[in-house]
Length: 311
Ligand code: ZN
Image (cartoon, rainbow, N blue to C red; front, side, top):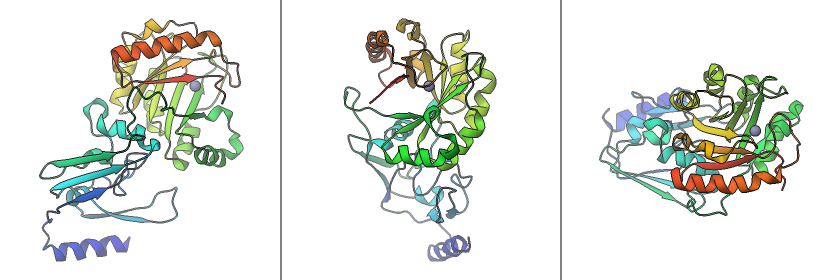
């Protein structure tokens, strides 16, 4: 973009080619953790030399131009303003970077003189005992695949907080569903968090592929996984959020030893393998039990339910 080069040269001329020190850099925060139009899926977001960069998102029909980290970090104070429950997931990731790594552009805002402030509302950062805070993850399994982008748009406008993608391999569960091409396509049309629920034998062999195609979290089954700790660490090392799912017949206590390493526990409320099944009522006491174990071992871990959930 010619405008980027022009703005860069204007700034460099004005500041005599030496970055200024701003008093305040005031920033927003997107549902995907972007800030100042710096997006983690754009190769220029961690630019170290240029002061200005341009970005054209495939989901937008307008170009963006922004200052880059070398300039934004030259400030006495940086201040984020974050509001709304759609930001809650990304905010957790920003405040608690996975594996100690800075995964989001917002994590790279580090003022040269050290003052970084977050102003967040109660929806973006609900207290852990706020039982009113519930997120809806819309299942892609229920979509009309011939009109997937429209369906994603519809659930987004209806208030869905994230998308849940059920991957079935015909071995781990007696059904086949979708794979990486669909997730890749979804990634192009949504900024919502993409949870990928892997109902597959030997998930370790496919973790990199599912991470690379755009999943934000990878959820693996406790059942049949003989090296769950290794699988969980592998997902962590890929920079993704980690979930473990248990089937209706698996006891809640089976989670205790792995819970400390998880971002999400998913309790199946139907036997996995098919959509449109009926909720199994006997899973209700287990959900309560899982909640109490989470509170005791890892209160930041999310609790999710999957199967036959109706409004
Ligand atoms: Zn699922």
